[in-house]
Length: 125
Image 1 (tube, rainbow, N blue to C red):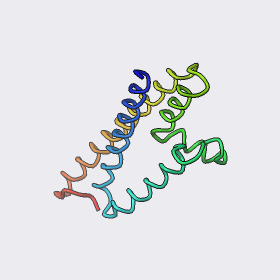
Image 2: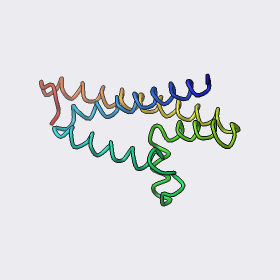
Image 3: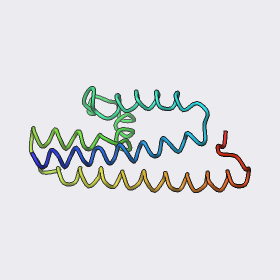
């Protein structure tokens, strides 16, 4: 039960960092609803929440590796299914992805801040 809770916490952290990345795009675009709806469907299709990632074409499997929750879903499946030989690697991969999303978000936010100070506006669109 503790490993399942740890997996859920890692998934929440990764999804929150991905949400931070998406929220930065609110400064850059005036169609945030379109972005959020599109990302909703992309996450449902490519993370393995609706059907296994192995059923996707190769390009779809590559996309699924850069999205959050894919590794957490695989870790939960391995925890309650086949075995836990890759469990720790999947969780560390999810945490590394969360750190990457945070780094990208902060970088874009700093760029947007500098651009907004130069232009004197709160947004860039």
